[in-house]
Length: 351
View 1 (cartoon, rainbow, N blue to C red):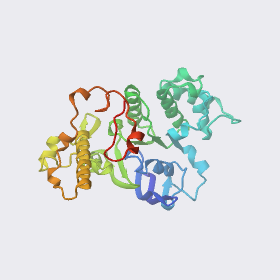
View 2 (view 1 turned 135 degrees about the horizontal axis):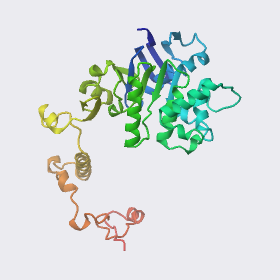
View 3 (view 1 turned 180 degrees about the vertical axis):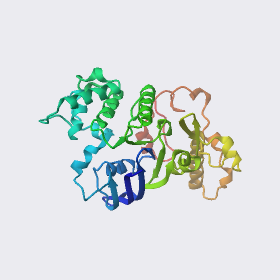
View 4 (view 1 turned 30 degrees about the vertical axis):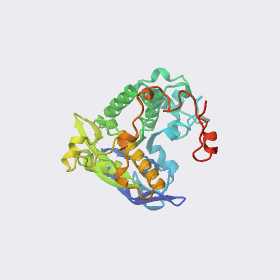
């Protein structure tokens, strides 16, 4: 199999910030890749490189056998299908849905003076039908729901019969039904041997469609792991990618991830292990620290061990629980400004 993408030591620097740092990645024909990582990992920047819309600052990027910097990108781009929220914002809201798909033949957003033949119109209609939105052909793009827009964008990404399709967070903004419908559509696309190479960017393992074969995990502009799904979607790699202790599970052809529970943490040794503190524990710790600081400021010689427990420090009067009122206000707002102006020890009650 030949290489569809071949990136070697690719780095991108902008305004003193390193967006990609020495990324080496190879994608071959027939593969379906998912790119996973937290916000700021460099996923979208990597997709801009592979979509021939951004040149690397350092390193080499070969796309469909062409090297960026030595090829006319306007000739290369029609060979690449792209679906992204950023590109969707460039699509005119008043554009006919049929034309949104059709104009991909010229890699433009918005119909102008281009000429299209009968085959172009037929392919556009067939793609809309394939994604279940043929009945929307005469609607304007701006009137569609988020789920309908995603399907139209998928149809557009395939208009030129591309050799690779890049999907940047296609499930973002969808409800559960919309997400599952999209995952089903992508699974059917991935299972078709005639389909081009697919690259899907997401934050969630739950959005990996059946039929996808490989994963690239990123953090801080660097590659954490890359390879077959079974070797990369693991507790170890996913925890390192998101910097949080995670447990990965696979049911059938779908994946899920959750925080490591207390049982797993207890097995680590001290009953806490790598488990993250709960919101109540964080609040209690914050209050305890504040109380300790206040005691130390008031009396530097005070014994820090004598500071009240956090549970005691945050206990509210019974009549304040569930009332929606701060303790001691009797339902009236306190005049904070007046309280601050009173000399120490002479704070007066507010009516």
